[in-house]
Image (cartoon, rainbow, N blue to C red; front, side):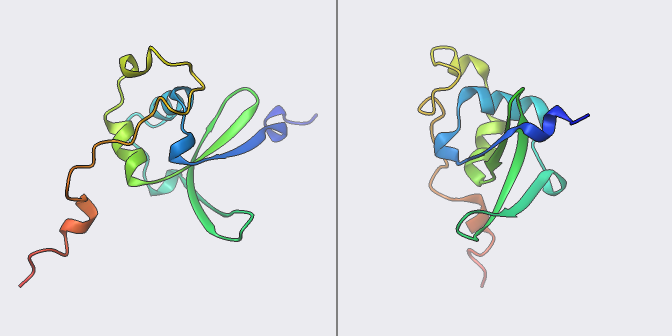
Length: 112
């Protein structure tokens, strides 16, 4: 017997291509956000190392590239924000407001 999961399409999803459906799957699977043990590392077609988190629908395994934007968007997720969009609309998920300072940059600042 072959496992149905093995026949899934694998789709790599960049933040720009993230849809409300995939975002809600991510938030459902990782309600407290993802951490290092959830991250899959693989090489893409250009032999670049990609870090992603995985969510699966009936027929597709989505590998969503991890990024600060993804993390912030998941933390601030509110399904009401997406009710006016189609589930598969990649324009629905906007870049989060990151503010002027990127939290990752702060640690190196003001060190005398």
